[in-house]
Image (cartoon, rainbow, N blue to C red; front, side):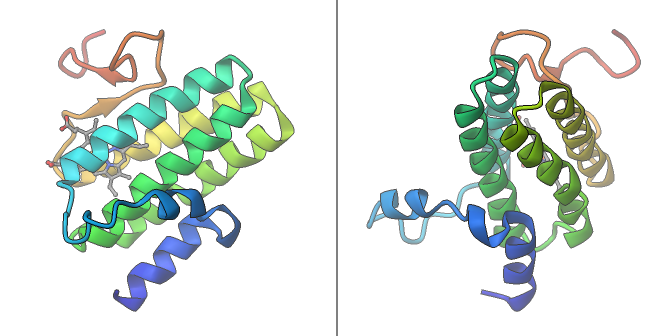
Length: 156
Ligand code: HEC
């Protein structure tokens, strides 16, 4: 593994939040399978929505879990796809940390702000990588894909 990638992964994850459990559950046959970037992002989308819903419901334990899963998806994307600029991932560090702090403090207001900033981070990377048509938003309800905007940009 490239040194740059590990440094990035550690910066993003923080040493305390590496999901040891996920390692334990890894299938021994999964070895060489490399998920497509779009598939990693699909997982990130699910976690992003569940993170929000768990926080709204003040299920902080679940929110903490979904946040770890979301971070793991972003780290995976950065490790596997070297074309992704490091800075696009590291700018998410601050909102991810804020979300984590808000969850620890069980602070709904701080949590809402952090998820808003995080969502903006998703979109700024999409814009910079010619995917400005993939527009994430803070979910408005529990509908599947409620955290994505499907109408063309500029229209409600
Ligand atoms: C470092 C850059 C980067 C960040 C950060 C990022 N994405 Fe993405 N995302 C991409 C790229 C590049 C694609 C296009 C992948 C492709 O074309 O296969 C994408 C595609 C997607 C898609 C479309 C997948 C599909 O198949 O329909 C979704 C949904 C998505 N991202 C969600 C998110 C969410 C949610 C976040 C924030 C939590 C996020 N992304 C953060 C780079 C990023």
